Length: 115
Image (cartoon, rainbow, N blue to C red):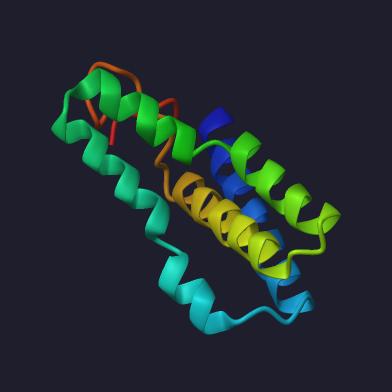
């Protein structure tokens, strides 16, 4: 049951980000170009599992993305806000499909399950 709730939470975040993105009339081309950009953080695993997990988790936590969105709102920087929403949508999409924050043991060990 908990796993289903976490997947649903990801779906809700993804849907909310899509709605907000459309509401503010941001560029959909930018959205599709940047949607998978946070996955570049997987290259940290080329160093080792510990470094990879830390870098991946920094790029896949809502705390950072929410701060980016708020920064964009406070300073009237729509491009920054759009990037934060795209980034949050990426994380929501990952959670919706079962990809979670990584443990240091190996890439497939996440807080949601073993992928």
